[in-house]
Amino acid sequence: MNVLDIIEKKRDKKTLTKEEIEYFVNGYTNNQITDYQAAAFVMAVFINGMTKQETTDLTLAMAHSGEILDLSTLNATIVDKHSTGGVGDKVSIILLPIVSSLGVPVAKMSGRGLGFTGGTIDKLESIPGYKTDIGMDQFIENVKKIGISLISQTLNMAPADKKLYSLRDTISCVESIPLIASSIMSKKIASGAQKIVLDVTVGKGAFMNKIEQARELATTMIDIGKLANRQTVCILTNMDEPLGYNVGNSLEIIEAIDFLKGNMPEDVEQVILTLGSYMIKLAGKGEDLEENKKKMLENIANGKAYEKFKELVKAQGGEISFVENIENIPRAKYIEPIYSLKSGYIHQINALEVGKIACSLGAGRITKEDSIDHQAGIILQKKVADFVEEGEVLAYIHTNKMEKLEDAKKALLENIKIEEEKIEKPKTILEMIE
Ligand code: URA
Image (cartoon, rainbow, N blue to C red; front, side, top):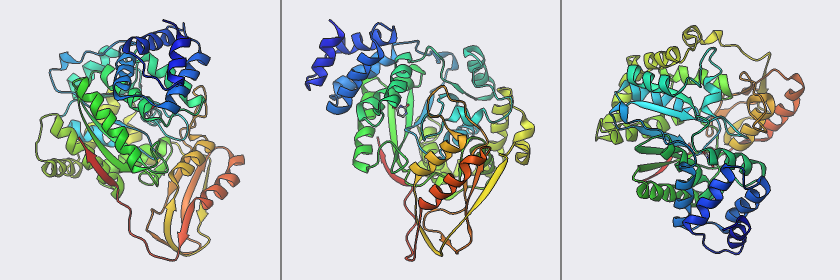
């Protein structure tokens, strides 16, 4: 077998065997296949697609390219959660302490942001002291002791996905159903999850812009889950406008803490309650989804979810004083209001563009070596369907780079569309597929 034959076969729209896929994944992981050969292979998959069997074989080969975490010592059903990515997506930071406070054990590994989408690990690291690399023993110990731990993916977990994901990002090959499905499911299988709840985002700020594509991605991941014996549920959620109001690392932590104290933006609340109700069900802690939502709301109202978040931060070395006094979380040097140029109803806040603007202010990485500015970002004051008066503040830009302000202001104004006609609030939860 050799890599040229494998590239040629995919280039010519032929179906690869399990052995050929394993040969490629192992060769690339061990540096025997070069980046340029892998890039050619990935581009061929991007253009010509893969059959369900090929996608499953790719997933399993990537999952087994490193260690498979054994969580059996936790003696519990571990339900994992993952999002296909978005802008302003602080769901894991809010949701996981809530379900943990209801007795669902949480052993979660998350990623960093790349491109216009943010990552949970970068957000958590904006809490001074919070360690995302506490090591496997401490990770398991924390789950046993307080029912939750949230860390970054270890180096040796699905290393093939790590290499392939970075490569895809540099050659414009992210938005492909077999590549996204295998990337996500390989990590979930390697991280020891028995059941999986997936937030499949749809819209301008998501990798899947159309509902039909999102459905196909969801069913592909559910099918892989079946073959790998991991029950998988997908919730399709709207990502046309950013989720909630805050975009940017520490700004999202502030919004997450506020949520846990009961200040819940409607769209974030719907995503949290829907995903959470399924996590609780799959963990065997409550069959009735509506009842599960009620229990979640109860634990927000009685402070148990917020206390669990504080326990999590403390166990990972974070400074609780910042959580208890969010006004002490460092803010950017420049905070600039953007005023509306006319009165009317907000018809669109383009999530992709807002994500890119936040990135340009310092909130995200263009390449994986870039460092990020935790304080940079945007706080929206309005959501789609809200009314705004001329001269009212639409958003605040937070940045430490004065030279970026003018361009960011202009771009943000261009990407918030205001019209005279009233419009309905868009739906947040679009579909559920299992
Ligand atoms: N998230 C992932 O983990 N992988 C992808 O390919 C896209 C989103």
